[in-house]
Image (cartoon, rainbow, N blue to C red; front, side, top):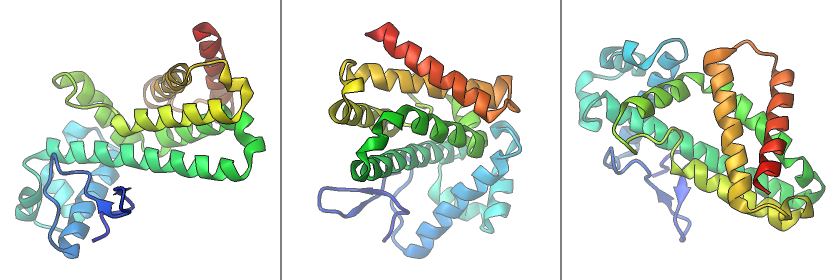
Length: 222
């Protein structure tokens, strides 16, 4: 079973990351249906808020049945938790691929902040709907119920920051936690601008502003 471009254990086997919310499917067909529900919800969120999207609409978009939905999810919130986990995993995989590529071309490591900022802008643009839903759920739910992008996102940023310190002396003067926090602040600012305050902001101007904030944040933490 593939478990969709997912996490691997030490033996290189696919790991089902949604176990807290949904049992691992016993058949490939059931797995495909599960991911159709996630895709359908995200497609609907591209143009609407989470509270405006009903289970019935998700079911219709996924070309499945209401019974099939509730065989997998206890409610709509459980599906949102799975979207949270999936997005966190995708961020983790992207960052690890980036580090692999930079190991092959270390001269580009100095450009890492700008590269990561470009990725974060693209993330907030292309996944605007689900990020907005997760942001609202985080603000309205019990403490630690929603993480915003999942702990995988924070862990990947810490790993990336340690990589930068190890491979470029420019970043060795800062702690991994300081670099990771500067990246998180950049993500928060990108999210606020692109989702709420100025969604039509020129991407080049936003990139320049976020890069300046990253650099200033590091200096403040030195």
